Image 1 (cartoon, rainbow, N blue to C red):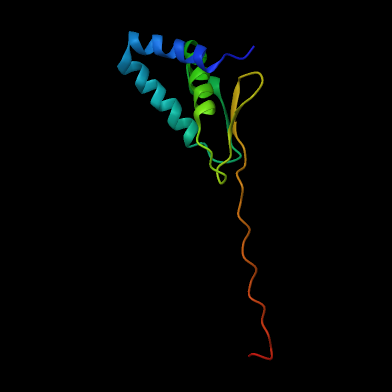
Image 2 (image 1 turned 90 degrees about the vertical axis):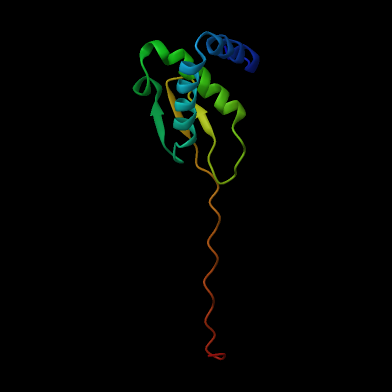
Length: 107
């Protein structure tokens, strides 16, 4: 079952109160990993953190997904159903303008 935004935030804020500096370093690192993931790429959560930190990593990724700003040129971040992989979809690509048509009469 999926946790709500409030449930995840409660867990994260409890951890933040216990060790704010350590929590913020981890939170910022996960946020940057998610934000800098290129379109069409993915990564496995277990490859990016220790097994003890996986639930916290998932919570931070879930919050990032819920709060991510909408940008039509950047694909949306997705967490797979088994919560093992994080992937970024493909954003919209603007069409290239058509090349000018050469008219032999106008030279």
